[in-house]
Image: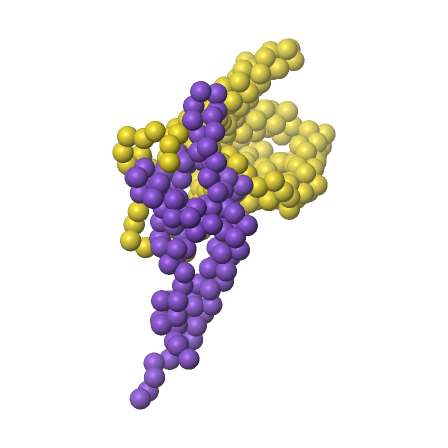
Length: 199
Length: 109
């Protein structure tokens, strides 16, 4: 242990512990790959999409067990994130869904979903302990995608929606890998041979 | 009346020691954490972490629960009610000290 603990280090310890689940980046990678595959192979049949998601969820669970084995386990305080959950379910998610509906039904040169989902990513970053600065870059890229149709990069409507979901899949993969590296950096290597079961 | 720098000495050493403050801070953010997580988070050796946890347990600030997850032995650590109020009191005391240090003027005599 270092000779002293400054407030920044202590805040980091608190936020990593309180949001440990969200920092386990490898959990999100299979979901991103499944989303990418579903869009890229144009999985028209729902059964393929369901199968992809089932495999992704199984791999995500395996990643969770890897974290528990390698970095340990934290039990969250029930109800600690009530405020965050309320905002998420009653404000952020409905807004995200509404933006998709708007862009699906009324395609225009400005892709509303981009900035709305970009803002949602900033809210996610803010509510899960801040530390992972790559989410600010990711949010800026997602928000900027709103201008893609206006710049003539892609047709509005379905082509833009498909491209957005590909971007989202890439975001899940890259964000997840970077989350993982951030967690590994913070938790660090074991200082000696360990037997996690003993005190 | 003691100045902010003298008052630092009055802080509870059981809580204020850096490793134990890190452990208590982590535990204040969750219901419980296991030994492995605390080991990775604090960067302490197994022996050091054990010693600090024993001191905190003896001081009544943490509860240690041993069990099994399948065949794997696990050690869960959580704050006791006293531990929670102690770490909160400590944070408040630190914040007061910080503010007092910002306002502090050296004695002109």
